[in-house]
Image (tube, rainbow, N blue to C red; front, side, top):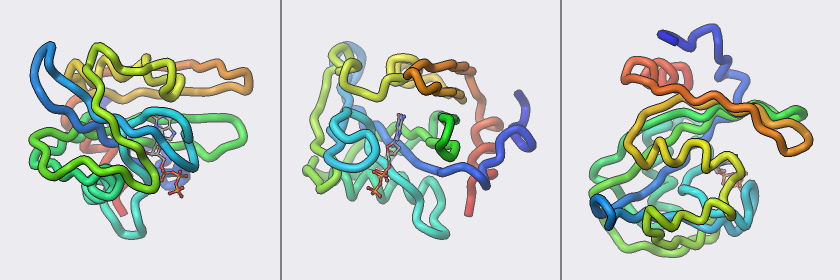
Length: 178
Ligand SMILES: Nc1[nH]c(=O)nc2c1ncn2[C@H]1C[C@H](O)[C@@H](COP(=O)(O)OP(=O)(O)OP(=O)(O)O)O1
Protein backbone atom coordinates (compact mmCIF):
# COMPACT_ATOMS: atom_id res chain seq x y z
CA UNK A 1 0.00 0.00 0.00
CA UNK A 2 2.84 2.36 -0.83
CA UNK A 3 0.82 4.63 -3.10
CA UNK A 4 -2.82 5.24 -3.88
CA UNK A 5 -2.08 6.88 -7.24
CA UNK A 6 -3.98 4.87 -9.83
CA UNK A 7 -6.10 3.12 -7.20
CA UNK A 8 -8.19 6.03 -6.01
CA UNK A 9 -9.63 8.55 -8.43
CA UNK A 10 -10.09 11.49 -6.12
CA UNK A 11 -10.98 13.72 -9.08
CA UNK A 12 -14.26 11.79 -9.35
CA UNK A 13 -14.86 11.73 -5.60
CA UNK A 14 -16.66 14.17 -3.30
CA UNK A 15 -14.14 15.50 -0.79
CA UNK A 16 -14.94 16.29 2.84
CA UNK A 17 -13.15 16.94 6.09
CA UNK A 18 -14.20 15.82 9.56
CA UNK A 19 -12.51 17.17 12.70
CA UNK A 20 -12.61 15.79 16.25
CA UNK A 21 -11.58 18.22 19.02
CA UNK A 22 -10.13 16.46 22.08
CA UNK A 23 -8.85 17.55 25.45
CA UNK A 24 -7.52 15.95 28.63
CA UNK A 25 -5.43 12.82 29.08
CA UNK A 26 -5.94 9.18 29.92
CA UNK A 27 -9.23 8.41 31.64
CA UNK A 28 -10.10 12.15 31.69
CA UNK A 29 -9.89 12.58 27.94
CA UNK A 30 -13.02 13.95 26.29
CA UNK A 31 -14.19 14.45 22.78
CA UNK A 32 -16.30 17.29 21.39
CA UNK A 33 -18.98 16.00 19.05
CA UNK A 34 -21.71 17.90 17.23
CA UNK A 35 -25.31 16.84 16.72
CA UNK A 36 -25.92 17.58 13.04
CA UNK A 37 -28.91 19.90 12.71
CA UNK A 38 -29.41 19.72 8.91
CA UNK A 39 -28.25 18.04 5.70
CA UNK A 40 -26.27 14.81 5.46
CA UNK A 41 -26.15 12.94 8.79
CA UNK A 42 -28.89 15.07 10.40
CA UNK A 43 -29.70 13.82 13.92
CA UNK A 44 -26.37 12.01 14.29
CA UNK A 45 -23.34 12.88 16.44
CA UNK A 46 -20.16 13.37 14.45
CA UNK A 47 -17.01 15.44 14.27
CA UNK A 48 -17.24 18.89 12.68
CA UNK A 49 -16.49 19.39 9.01
CA UNK A 50 -17.66 19.80 5.46
CA UNK A 51 -16.62 20.36 1.89
CA UNK A 52 -13.62 22.44 0.79
CA UNK A 53 -14.44 25.68 -0.97
CA UNK A 54 -13.09 26.10 -4.53
CA UNK A 55 -9.29 26.41 -4.35
CA UNK A 56 -9.16 25.67 -0.62
CA UNK A 57 -6.74 23.06 0.75
CA UNK A 58 -8.15 20.35 2.99
CA UNK A 59 -6.09 21.61 5.95
CA UNK A 60 -7.53 25.10 5.48
CA UNK A 61 -11.01 23.61 5.11
CA UNK A 62 -10.57 21.70 8.38
CA UNK A 63 -9.54 24.86 10.27
CA UNK A 64 -12.40 26.90 8.77
CA UNK A 65 -15.07 24.26 9.40
CA UNK A 66 -13.90 23.73 12.98
CA UNK A 67 -14.24 27.42 13.77
CA UNK A 68 -17.49 27.92 11.84
CA UNK A 69 -19.26 24.91 13.30
CA UNK A 70 -18.17 24.99 16.96
CA UNK A 71 -16.22 28.23 17.54
CA UNK A 72 -12.88 26.54 18.29
CA UNK A 73 -9.41 26.93 16.79
CA UNK A 74 -6.67 24.34 17.26
CA UNK A 75 -3.02 25.16 17.88
CA UNK A 76 -2.33 21.51 17.09
CA UNK A 77 -4.37 20.11 14.19
CA UNK A 78 -3.42 16.56 13.16
CA UNK A 79 -4.36 14.95 9.87
CA UNK A 80 -4.76 11.32 10.95
CA UNK A 81 -6.62 9.39 8.30
CA UNK A 82 -8.85 9.07 5.28
CA UNK A 83 -12.21 7.34 4.84
CA UNK A 84 -12.96 6.18 1.31
CA UNK A 85 -16.67 5.46 0.93
CA UNK A 86 -18.64 3.88 -1.88
CA UNK A 87 -22.40 3.53 -1.99
CA UNK A 88 -24.38 2.36 -5.03
CA UNK A 89 -26.14 5.25 -6.75
CA UNK A 90 -24.03 7.95 -5.06
CA UNK A 91 -20.70 9.54 -5.92
CA UNK A 92 -17.80 8.11 -3.94
CA UNK A 93 -16.72 10.17 -0.93
CA UNK A 94 -13.27 10.71 0.56
CA UNK A 95 -13.41 12.13 4.08
CA UNK A 96 -10.12 13.51 5.43
CA UNK A 97 -10.02 13.00 9.20
CA UNK A 98 -8.35 15.41 11.66
CA UNK A 99 -8.01 15.50 15.41
CA UNK A 100 -7.78 18.93 17.06
CA UNK A 101 -5.72 19.54 20.22
CA UNK A 102 -4.52 22.51 22.27
CA UNK A 103 -7.82 24.26 21.63
CA UNK A 104 -8.47 27.99 21.71
CA UNK A 105 -11.83 29.79 22.01
CA UNK A 106 -15.25 29.06 23.43
CA UNK A 107 -17.50 26.30 22.21
CA UNK A 108 -20.55 27.79 20.50
CA UNK A 109 -23.54 26.21 18.80
CA UNK A 110 -23.83 26.91 15.06
CA UNK A 111 -26.64 26.64 12.50
CA UNK A 112 -25.23 23.25 11.54
CA UNK A 113 -24.10 21.65 14.81
CA UNK A 114 -25.08 21.42 18.46
CA UNK A 115 -21.75 20.70 20.24
CA UNK A 116 -21.36 18.62 23.39
CA UNK A 117 -18.35 17.16 25.21
CA UNK A 118 -18.37 13.38 25.78
CA UNK A 119 -16.00 11.40 27.99
CA UNK A 120 -14.14 9.00 25.74
CA UNK A 121 -15.81 6.04 27.46
CA UNK A 122 -19.28 7.46 26.75
CA UNK A 123 -19.18 8.13 23.02
CA UNK A 124 -22.80 7.69 21.79
CA UNK A 125 -22.09 5.18 19.03
CA UNK A 126 -25.75 4.20 18.73
CA UNK A 127 -26.49 7.74 17.49
CA UNK A 128 -23.48 8.14 15.18
CA UNK A 129 -22.93 7.12 11.54
CA UNK A 130 -23.26 3.32 11.44
CA UNK A 131 -19.59 2.77 10.58
CA UNK A 132 -18.25 4.99 13.40
CA UNK A 133 -17.64 2.10 15.84
CA UNK A 134 -15.45 0.46 13.20
CA UNK A 135 -12.85 3.25 13.09
CA UNK A 136 -13.29 5.77 15.92
CA UNK A 137 -11.53 3.48 18.45
CA UNK A 138 -8.41 3.47 16.22
CA UNK A 139 -8.57 7.26 15.92
CA UNK A 140 -9.00 7.61 19.69
CA UNK A 141 -5.95 5.36 20.17
CA UNK A 142 -3.92 7.84 18.13
CA UNK A 143 -3.56 5.56 15.11
CA UNK A 144 -3.31 6.83 11.56
CA UNK A 145 -5.32 4.91 9.03
CA UNK A 146 -6.94 4.56 5.63
CA UNK A 147 -10.35 2.94 5.77
CA UNK A 148 -12.53 1.82 2.89
CA UNK A 149 -16.26 1.28 3.31
CA UNK A 150 -18.67 -0.12 0.75
CA UNK A 151 -22.34 0.28 1.68
CA UNK A 152 -25.07 -1.84 0.10
CA UNK A 153 -28.81 -1.13 -0.21
CA UNK A 154 -29.62 -3.24 2.85
CA UNK A 155 -27.49 -1.12 5.20
CA UNK A 156 -24.67 -3.68 5.10
CA UNK A 157 -21.07 -2.51 5.13
CA UNK A 158 -17.91 -4.11 3.84
CA UNK A 159 -14.89 -2.50 5.35
CA UNK A 160 -11.14 -2.62 5.39
CA UNK A 161 -9.07 -0.49 7.76
CA UNK A 162 -5.32 -0.29 7.40
CA UNK A 163 -2.72 1.61 9.36
CA UNK A 164 -1.08 4.34 7.31
CA UNK A 165 2.21 6.16 7.63
CA UNK A 166 3.12 9.78 6.88
CA UNK A 167 4.00 9.06 3.26
CA UNK A 168 0.72 7.27 2.57
CA UNK A 169 -1.37 10.02 4.13
CA UNK A 170 0.64 12.74 2.39
CA UNK A 171 0.16 10.92 -0.92
CA UNK A 172 -3.62 10.93 -0.53
CA UNK A 173 -3.66 14.57 0.55
CA UNK A 174 -1.57 15.49 -2.51
CA UNK A 175 -4.05 13.70 -4.80
CA UNK A 176 -6.85 15.78 -3.29
CA UNK A 177 -5.20 19.21 -3.40
CA UNK A 178 -6.89 21.89 -5.54
N1 LIG B 1 -20.88 8.27 6.51
C1 LIG B 1 -20.22 9.27 7.08
N2 LIG B 1 -19.35 9.02 8.10
C2 LIG B 1 -18.66 10.03 8.72
O1 LIG B 1 -17.87 9.75 9.63
N3 LIG B 1 -18.77 11.31 8.36
C3 LIG B 1 -19.62 11.58 7.37
C4 LIG B 1 -20.38 10.59 6.68
N4 LIG B 1 -21.14 11.21 5.74
C5 LIG B 1 -20.85 12.53 5.85
N5 LIG B 1 -19.93 12.75 6.83
C6 LIG B 1 -19.39 14.04 7.25
C7 LIG B 1 -18.41 14.64 6.30
C8 LIG B 1 -18.61 16.11 6.60
O2 LIG B 1 -17.89 16.45 7.78
C9 LIG B 1 -20.09 16.22 6.90
C10 LIG B 1 -20.94 16.59 5.69
O3 LIG B 1 -20.52 17.84 5.23
P1 LIG B 1 -21.53 19.03 5.01
O4 LIG B 1 -22.15 19.35 6.29
O5 LIG B 1 -20.83 20.11 4.26
O6 LIG B 1 -22.56 18.33 4.06
P2 LIG B 1 -23.99 18.82 3.76
O7 LIG B 1 -24.37 18.11 2.49
O8 LIG B 1 -24.83 18.67 4.96
O9 LIG B 1 -23.63 20.35 3.47
P3 LIG B 1 -24.45 21.68 3.37
O10 LIG B 1 -24.47 21.94 1.89
O11 LIG B 1 -23.56 22.65 4.13
O12 LIG B 1 -25.80 21.46 4.02
O13 LIG B 1 -20.50 14.93 7.33
